[in-house]
Length: 73
Image 1 (cartoon, rainbow, N blue to C red):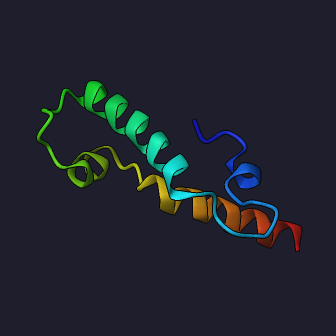
Image 2: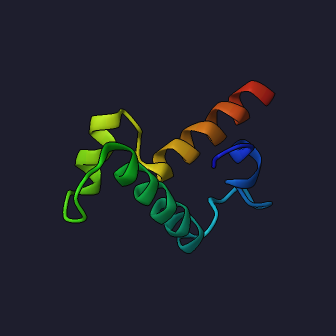
């Protein structure tokens, strides 16, 4: 789902992509994680992410972009 995010998570001006795009991806990720571990709908997303050791998507995308910038510098 985040394949190539080092490139597409940052726009041409060096800013993060808009929040609505990240929110769409988070919805898909949350649905998949709930199905994988069998969590109830009312289970907090943070608890699910902690249980499966998956960082929040916005932080992961930012980390990937930062690592890419450091590698290319």
